[in-house]
Image 1 (cartoon, rainbow, N blue to C red):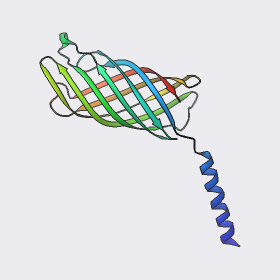
Image 2 (image 1 turned 180 degrees about the vertical axis):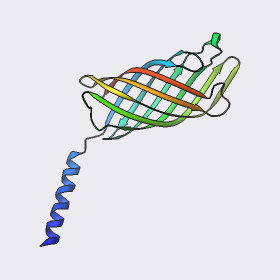
Image 3 (image 1 turned 180 degrees about the horizontal axis):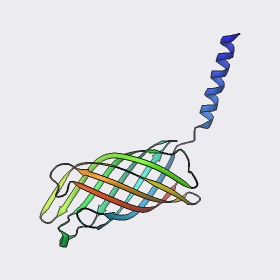
Image 4 (image 1 turned 60 degrees about the vertical axis):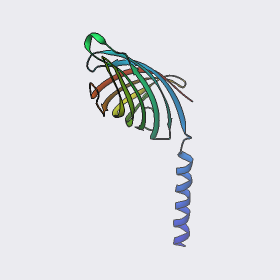
Length: 163
């Protein structure tokens, strides 16, 4: 009689677990912000993400304007990121941490360098209405190869829509 009860409990727990899993979700983000190295420069970009309950994946592109007066080249990045996030919003806030790798292109001041890069950071998605959220994010980029500046700090705010 004990094995039947243990099997019943295990089956019941499995059904509860499967019933609690949310379907996969996707979202789009358009953002604008500041790249602070070596001078404050405008950065614009976008991202598309796909997430399960806690783990997500994101692909993003950003374009930082050059600042000739500060000898700061333009910087374009294309990154694939892994996100770890709270499984649901807490008072309308969903926190996340992210790390990723990809490619960059630095151009200006007589240089042009394309190579690999990594990034790490985090942020929060703030519920606005329905599937629309505001997103605030901070990232540190480490550029490989021969960049003029090998570390970049980026802060942005963006509009995020889930579907």
